[in-house]
Image 1: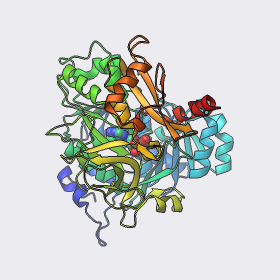
Image 2: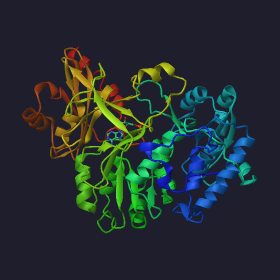
Image 3: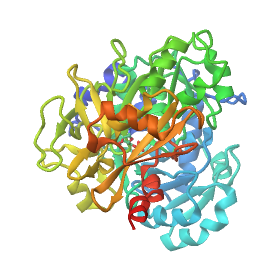
Image 4: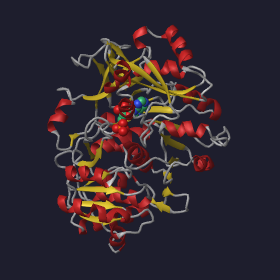
Length: 531
Ligand code: AMP
C-alpha cells in the first residue's frame, strides 16, 4: 500500500525515512512516484508534435512495458541496456525497468558498435534494447553476453513496443529497498575506461525530492526538456524532478534554438548545459518578452562562463541558476533560489549533502579560500563502480566522503567555486597552475570568445602551460596582445608558453570541453619545437 501522499511526506534528503523492519512498503522509485500522483488526468509529457501523455497514461504504459520486459526474461536486479533515440517511449522504458525491479542502463546514442561491445560485456545485461537500424550489428555481442535483443524507435515502433502493446496494463511493481540498484550510468571516461556508476532507488529519490523543494517546483511548472536522456542531467534531474512535482515537460528530441525560443512562452523552467545558453544568446528572438513566462533557468554539467551569465541576465532579466553535479553523485550544490546567483560559482551544498575541500594527498580539510579536492557525502552519492571494488574503495574516504576528482574552493561567502578537474591541473617547473585562473584572464580580453588552457609535455618544465583560444575574428586579437595583457595579471609561471587559435573548442554532447583531445592534439608541441 503506497504510503507517501505528497512531497512533504516523502522525507527529504535531510531526513530520508529509514525503512522499518515491519513495513512491507516498497522504496522502489516508481512506487514513490506513483503514490505522489494526485491527479492521473494531468499532463506529464507533451511533444511539439502534439503527443500528450498524462500521469495515468504513464502508469498504464509502464505497466504494459514492464509486462513485456518480464516476458522477455528480465528479472529483478537484471540490467536492461538501452541505446535508443530520445522519445516518450524511451521514458516509458526507463520507468518500466524500475517497475520490473531491474536496473536501467542508458547508453549514449553516439556510441558506435565497437564502443558498445565494452559496455555490453562489462554490464552483462539480460536484455538490450536498441534502434531497429542497429539490431543486426548488436546480434553477436548480445549472444556473447547471453542477452536478448529487442528494438524500439522514437515513434513507438519496434519489437519491444509491439510486445508491450499486447500486454495488460495491470502490473504489480516489484518491491525494492532503498539500497537496491535503480540504474547504472557509465561515466564519460575521458581518462581510461568508462566506469559504471551504480545508483540506488534512494540516491535518485532523495535528489529528486530535494530539488523539487529547493528549486520550488510545483504541478503548474512546464519544463522545456531539450537535454539527452542517457545522462544524469536530462534523465534524472529533468525527468524525475518534473514527475515528482506533478508538473509537465515539453519534450524535445534535441536542442534546436529556433524551437526553444518559440516554445519559451509556454514553459516555466528550462534546464540546459552552458552551450544551450551561449547559442540562445546568438538568437535574435531571445528577448525579455519571450522569456517573460519563465521563472527559472538552470545550468550545469560544465562551467557556465560568468560573461554568459551576465549577458543572459541583461537580455532576459533572469539570473541563470548554476548547479554542480556528476554521474556518480547526482546534484551536490546549487546557487540559491532566492538570494544571489553568483556568476562563476556553483552555490551551496543541497540540503542533506555535505561538501568539504581537502588536500588531495593527505585528505585533510583545507581552510576556506584554499583550493583542494571537492569531497561529497550524502544520500545522493552512488553505491560504487560496477564490478570495480578496488576503484570504488580508492575513491571513497573511510568516513564515506566521495573523492569527486574536481578541484574547488569555498569563497568568503560560502559559495563553492570549481577550479577544474584534478587531472587538468598543470604542474610546470614544480608549480601548480589551475587552468581556470588563466582561462578567466584570457576570456576577459576583448576579442576573445573563449579559451581552454592545458598542460603539454615540455622538456624543461615538465608541462608547458598552453592556451587554445577562440577569437571573434582573426583581426580581433593576437598572441602578442594576449601575452602583454597576461604579463600584468599573472605570475610568470602561469603565463602560457604557447597560444594557439582555433575556430571551435572540441566538446562532447554535454558541452564539456574535451581537454584530453586538446592535450593529444598539442602533445608534441614543445618536444618538436625543442628537437
Ligand atoms: P558528468 O558525470 O558527465 O555529469 O560530469 C560531471 C563533471 O562535470 C563534474 O565532475 C564537473 O567536473 C563537471 N561539472 C558539472 N557541473 C558543473 C558546473 N556547474 N561547473 C563546472 N563543472 C561542472
